[in-house]
Length: 143
Image (cartoon, rainbow, N blue to C red):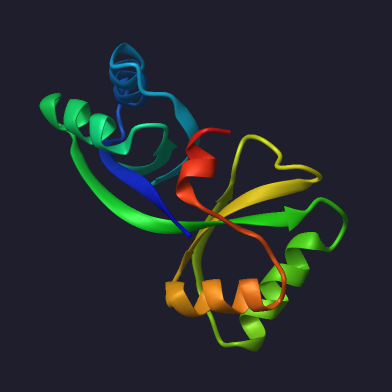
Protein backbone atom coordinates (compact mmCIF):
# COMPACT_ATOMS: atom_id res chain seq x y z
CA UNK A 1 0.00 0.00 0.00
CA UNK A 2 3.02 2.26 0.18
CA UNK A 3 4.39 4.19 -2.76
CA UNK A 4 8.07 5.09 -3.07
CA UNK A 5 8.78 8.76 -3.64
CA UNK A 6 12.15 10.38 -4.19
CA UNK A 7 12.98 13.87 -2.97
CA UNK A 8 15.66 15.88 -4.70
CA UNK A 9 17.20 18.90 -3.02
CA UNK A 10 18.07 21.43 -5.68
CA UNK A 11 19.52 24.88 -5.67
CA UNK A 12 16.98 27.48 -6.67
CA UNK A 13 18.83 28.68 -9.72
CA UNK A 14 18.33 28.76 -13.44
CA UNK A 15 18.45 25.39 -15.19
CA UNK A 16 18.58 23.04 -12.20
CA UNK A 17 15.03 21.72 -12.61
CA UNK A 18 15.63 21.15 -16.31
CA UNK A 19 18.84 19.27 -15.45
CA UNK A 20 16.95 16.90 -13.14
CA UNK A 21 14.26 16.16 -15.69
CA UNK A 22 16.79 15.77 -18.53
CA UNK A 23 18.88 13.37 -16.41
CA UNK A 24 15.84 11.22 -15.72
CA UNK A 25 14.70 11.35 -19.33
CA UNK A 26 18.10 10.35 -20.67
CA UNK A 27 18.09 7.39 -18.26
CA UNK A 28 14.69 6.23 -19.47
CA UNK A 29 12.97 7.08 -16.20
CA UNK A 30 9.38 8.23 -16.63
CA UNK A 31 8.01 10.80 -14.18
CA UNK A 32 4.52 9.81 -13.05
CA UNK A 33 3.88 12.90 -10.90
CA UNK A 34 5.80 15.61 -9.10
CA UNK A 35 5.58 18.46 -6.66
CA UNK A 36 8.01 21.34 -6.24
CA UNK A 37 8.26 23.42 -3.08
CA UNK A 38 10.87 26.12 -2.87
CA UNK A 39 12.48 28.69 -0.67
CA UNK A 40 14.68 31.52 -1.83
CA UNK A 41 17.81 29.33 -1.96
CA UNK A 42 16.72 25.68 -2.28
CA UNK A 43 13.80 23.63 -3.47
CA UNK A 44 12.50 20.18 -2.72
CA UNK A 45 11.37 18.31 -5.79
CA UNK A 46 9.22 15.30 -4.90
CA UNK A 47 8.81 12.73 -7.65
CA UNK A 48 7.07 9.44 -8.22
CA UNK A 49 8.68 7.67 -11.13
CA UNK A 50 8.40 4.31 -12.83
CA UNK A 51 11.88 3.20 -11.60
CA UNK A 52 12.83 4.66 -8.22
CA UNK A 53 16.22 2.95 -7.86
CA UNK A 54 17.37 3.96 -11.36
CA UNK A 55 16.25 7.55 -10.70
CA UNK A 56 18.18 7.69 -7.43
CA UNK A 57 21.30 6.28 -9.03
CA UNK A 58 21.45 8.61 -12.03
CA UNK A 59 20.62 11.71 -9.99
CA UNK A 60 23.30 10.89 -7.40
CA UNK A 61 25.80 10.36 -10.21
CA UNK A 62 25.02 13.93 -11.32
CA UNK A 63 25.70 15.21 -7.80
CA UNK A 64 22.16 15.73 -6.58
CA UNK A 65 21.15 15.00 -3.00
CA UNK A 66 18.37 12.42 -3.19
CA UNK A 67 16.34 10.65 -0.54
CA UNK A 68 13.55 8.10 -0.68
CA UNK A 69 10.37 8.24 1.41
CA UNK A 70 7.12 6.33 1.44
CA UNK A 71 3.85 8.04 0.67
CA UNK A 72 0.29 6.84 0.15
CA UNK A 73 -1.81 7.09 -3.04
CA UNK A 74 -5.53 7.39 -2.48
CA UNK A 75 -8.35 7.42 -4.99
CA UNK A 76 -10.52 10.46 -4.38
CA UNK A 77 -14.09 10.51 -5.66
CA UNK A 78 -14.07 13.00 -8.54
CA UNK A 79 -17.03 15.07 -7.40
CA UNK A 80 -17.52 18.18 -5.28
CA UNK A 81 -16.57 17.33 -1.71
CA UNK A 82 -14.65 14.16 -2.61
CA UNK A 83 -11.39 15.37 -1.09
CA UNK A 84 -13.22 16.85 1.89
CA UNK A 85 -14.69 13.41 2.69
CA UNK A 86 -11.23 11.83 2.75
CA UNK A 87 -9.74 14.62 4.86
CA UNK A 88 -12.69 14.51 7.27
CA UNK A 89 -12.18 10.76 7.83
CA UNK A 90 -8.50 11.38 8.58
CA UNK A 91 -9.26 14.33 10.83
CA UNK A 92 -11.77 12.27 12.83
CA UNK A 93 -8.97 9.80 13.67
CA UNK A 94 -6.47 12.57 14.52
CA UNK A 95 -4.21 11.93 11.51
CA UNK A 96 -2.22 14.87 10.21
CA UNK A 97 -1.51 15.37 6.51
CA UNK A 98 2.06 16.63 6.20
CA UNK A 99 1.64 17.36 2.50
CA UNK A 100 -0.25 16.16 -0.55
CA UNK A 101 -0.30 16.58 -4.30
CA UNK A 102 -2.27 15.24 -7.23
CA UNK A 103 -1.38 12.40 -9.55
CA UNK A 104 -1.49 13.21 -13.27
CA UNK A 105 -4.00 10.59 -14.36
CA UNK A 106 -7.38 9.47 -13.24
CA UNK A 107 -8.15 6.02 -11.93
CA UNK A 108 -11.58 4.84 -13.10
CA UNK A 109 -13.95 7.69 -12.13
CA UNK A 110 -11.64 8.93 -9.39
CA UNK A 111 -8.77 11.33 -9.07
CA UNK A 112 -5.60 10.16 -7.32
CA UNK A 113 -3.91 12.14 -4.56
CA UNK A 114 -0.51 11.45 -3.02
CA UNK A 115 -0.32 11.95 0.76
CA UNK A 116 2.41 12.04 3.33
CA UNK A 117 0.97 11.41 6.80
CA UNK A 118 2.40 11.71 10.28
CA UNK A 119 1.04 8.19 11.01
CA UNK A 120 1.11 6.26 7.74
CA UNK A 121 -0.15 2.86 8.94
CA UNK A 122 -2.97 4.44 10.93
CA UNK A 123 -3.95 6.54 7.91
CA UNK A 124 -4.06 3.47 5.65
CA UNK A 125 -6.18 1.63 8.21
CA UNK A 126 -8.56 4.57 8.55
CA UNK A 127 -8.93 5.02 4.80
CA UNK A 128 -9.48 1.36 3.96
CA UNK A 129 -11.86 1.06 6.93
CA UNK A 130 -13.94 3.88 5.40
CA UNK A 131 -13.90 2.10 2.00
CA UNK A 132 -11.52 4.51 0.31
CA UNK A 133 -9.13 2.84 -2.15
CA UNK A 134 -5.43 3.01 -1.33
CA UNK A 135 -3.42 2.16 -4.43
CA UNK A 136 -0.34 -0.07 -4.27
CA UNK A 137 2.89 1.30 -5.71
CA UNK A 138 3.11 -1.13 -8.63
CA UNK A 139 -0.30 -0.05 -9.88
CA UNK A 140 0.60 3.62 -9.58
CA UNK A 141 3.96 3.26 -11.35
CA UNK A 142 2.27 1.60 -14.33
CA UNK A 143 -0.61 4.07 -14.79
